[in-house]
Image (cartoon, rainbow, N blue to C red):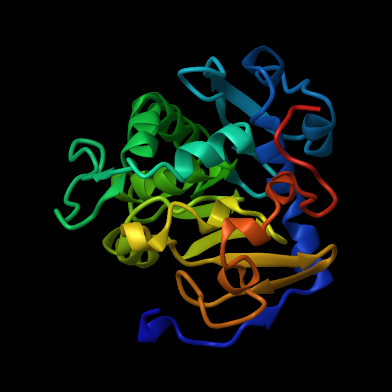
Length: 282
């Protein structure tokens, strides 16, 4: 853990946890088919944030994860959301010894140092929708004079959201604030990725639930590192903010709570997050 990140674990208040609920619903809605999302008629997730205005929805739930873009007038922010995937299948991919990293595409990530590397599968998935999403984001910023972009996602969607935060920070004016809220996110890149991310995206929370296994993979010994912003739900209604990138020193944070996959529970990956389960539309 870098010295600059060193601080104490802090307890989250009930109001701080409650404030995360709309973002959880946005992540939940990303599991719904585009034909229901585009009209914002996707059941409980859409009903929880009725004022949201969707402008783009796509993906096929196969080669391309579902995604959507829209404007949230309550917070005056553009929302980008990415779908996740089945945690049991996802875990097999994340623990595969053949996982490798690659440099981000310089056309999508201009000016990024050659030391920065990303999980190749995540990078390729992100690249498949990056340009169309960015175009829509720019359009909404112009239409609404928005000053911020908020990216959300769960599981694989969380990994894509993390990459999208960096992508937006590099491709939008510096006057546009970037915020990210992710759930059950695996490690996405190497330590150079984490260092650059931390410097560009200060408003970021990656929420880990109890004994969820997904946030501890891919393994650190393979060169992967988390970015900052860990929030660990210790038990229902009880969560802490953990300092640094991969906090391996405090018993309340994920690494100490889930030292390996044998003491974890993949079902915790689905929630509950503030009483909300993720992983499906319903």
